Length: 226
Image (cartoon, rainbow, N blue to C red):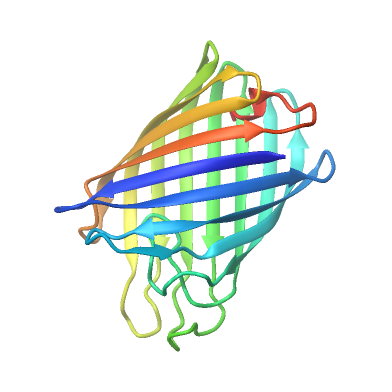
């Protein structure tokens, strides 16, 4: 079993907003695992609300020394307030939504990392409004250094407006981050995110931190470095 605790903070013109998330992954076989994700959000004015939860599975399509490819079909569960969420992450919709994630890691000392996720609401949520689809794709180049990995890349977000015409968000951002695994079953990561181009004022800088831990089994922290 693997657990992740994630903290996100974004800084708009005034105040700050953030998310605190927890994720649990349970390995069923060498190829398949299941996971659940949930958390809360803090708004710039100080209010705190639940975020939509996410449950799903992950299948390793390819697992070689220099190439790993995986897909993750998921379901978004409406536990949060409609519209909640940092703009570069899927917001709460008030509906049960199908979602899909995927990642590819290629290389040895030098790595190419591709991450993608999409969520497509199929019906109007608790507020009788059909929220728009969300797509995000990240591309990073990384290099292994000692017990860690340093990565730089770009992240693109496309969020369509709801059927009432409100919302919608497009962004291209630069990212810089790293992961260090000083202990066999624990890894710590951090990432900076800065908008390069966006269709609306949302935030100027975002910071993410992550703590991952593997409990039981024979997994090694090499997986954290991906």
